[in-house]
Image (tube, one colour):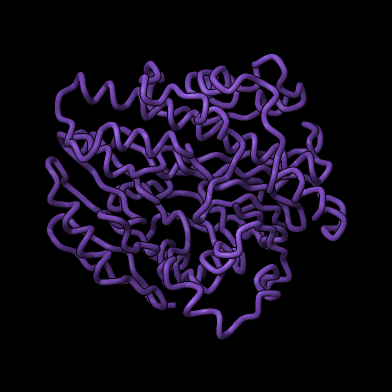
Length: 409
């Protein structure tokens, strides 16, 4: 395993290593981001790839301005993972999982009340609504949910719509998913309660659904430099992040119910992290850190780099590396654009191949095009990505999670 190279410009660096391919267009986008007002550093992760206008898989530090566009259209997107005891054999679970996750029942609460509760109180606020399952509230109360930046501000009129509340408990499309996985390797004992080889982990990767898109449309590509407008935006971003946490909590709970593990005494530790947001920086010279598809990796804290449905995800422990803004890749990163996936893969696979994975897992999905667009072959291999992160000194491996059942919408 070789030492990764760091291609650097005065304000830009990219973590690379053997087997990690970074597209030129993604680096060009990153350099353009570095030219935004106030930007003092821009770091590309090993999963860096081109996005619509800005790259995905980056973290930037700004000395003077906050940039809503650098958070993107899914504010608060992240991962929630819950360790559970071994569950019943998966062949008996598939129908129950499909009923609970692919086409779930609507929430038993008013959608506007749900929006307001999630916006201001996150998972705990949602769980406290009359009509929500008591066991859900018991679990939510045990989780040390990471707090978004400051209190949530008022819900803007443009975002105060029932349809946003109705989206709670839905994954959304794209690379979002819900997953039942098995702990395959543990390299850091006692990192998380119950995290041992052979245990299971229920994981949700999703965000704020339409709320995040409405937020970025509301602020457009403005560079926020005045304290009052920064505070207003950060209050709205905090609301979106709490909504996204509540959304993931529901997704995880429904899958736990489907596999018979929705009881506090069957659950181990829970990990929740956000990889699309703005946070205070560690340095006075760079008070605002923007992450777009990059997971936090502060010293000693656990984080996750996602694989694909055909490769493991890795729980990592951050090392608080300031040179890379205390961050890791949020996933393996795309290597085939979504629009090209079917054309480039259809000659190699039959339709029947799309719902099974090379690791023996199952894929539940009601959209045929998404089976192609999110096929494991459209993603970069996860091993070189994680190896590059380790060699760059940003994180160390804790445990590998092999997907058994992946739900896509």
